[in-house]
Structures are given as C-alpha cells and as structure tokens.
Amino acid sequence: MTLPFVKMQGIGNDFVMLDTITDPLPDLDLAALSRRTNDRRRGIGGDGLILVEKGESEPFRMRMFNPDGSESEMCGNGIRCFARLLKDHGHLDGSVST
Image (cartoon, rainbow, N blue to C red; front, side, top):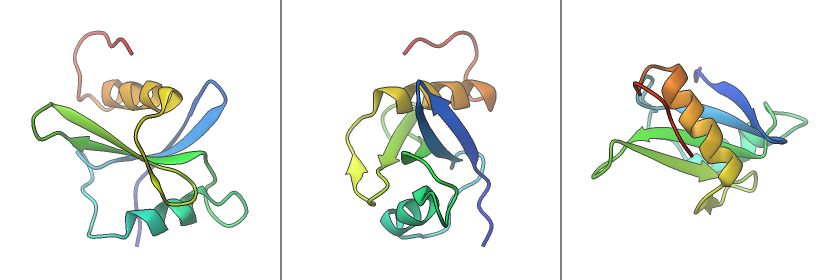
C-alpha cells in the first residue's frame, strides 16, 4: 500500500502529514499507522501523524496521533503545519493566522 505524505517541521517538532482531502485514506487502524510511520528507526520518523480532513460543521479538521498511537487533543506546532499544508495544497485562499 502506498500513502502520499508530506513531512513537515514546526519549531523543532516534525510531523508526517496526510492530506485526506486530496488523497482519501482506506479503512486503516490509525493508531497502528501512527506507531509505524513515526518510528525513527523503521519508519519515516516523527513526533506525530497529522491527518488533514474535511470537517463536519467546519471547513477543515486536524487529527493528530502521537508516536505511541494515542490521539492527541491539540498540538501547537502541529497546527502550524496543518495551516501551511492547507495553504500549500490549495485548500485555502488568502492568508492564514494560527
């Protein structure tokens, strides 16, 4: 299986980013995917896996998974990368403030 990803860094934290708006994910165990991709010896390596998704009541949604597979509520450096990816991938017009 091939998953297109972007590796981004925000003030010292690095993240594996998946744009599920452009490239929808198959049905996956996201906790296991995070453990595998964030492993610095056998995976891509990172401080977290961030999914860029269409929101339900908002235009976009960020989901972040820690390297241990747990889902995080929020990550300040991750939200910077989330906003940048939205802009870079053409999902947003104009400027972005985080």
